[in-house]
Length: 133
Ligand SMILES: [Zn+2]
Image (cartoon, rainbow, N blue to C red; front, side, top):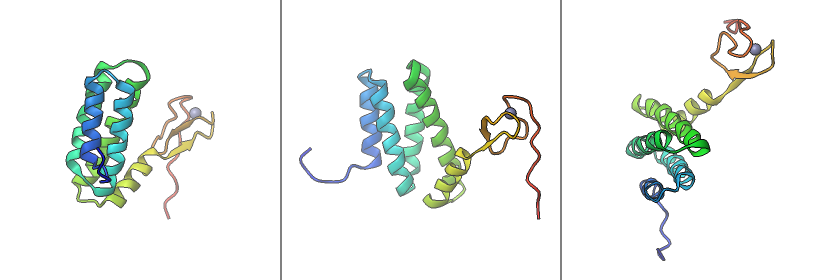
């Protein structure tokens, strides 16, 4: 490229799509993640939609680890989009994402489970909601 211009999220998703078209699923997912991370900073909804579509395609057509990573990326994008759609700014979108990613430890079997879980999917332990004050 030669020019020392910063790469835009749009370009990163384009690179990801180009990698995927060359059959390089792993590189495609990595580029798409990077594009999404940049898009989070700029709050660019279009990029998240494109990345989610690309990730869906990779998740459906690739195999193994890249397919799993792509499925995770698609979910991540959709959570971002839900936040952006509500008029949230990038910062609060990030907190939505981190809220979504936050885990709790099951008091019975000590597995990591969703913080919103009320019943442990591993051992069936019923988790009481935190007391309200
Ligand atoms: Zn458990």
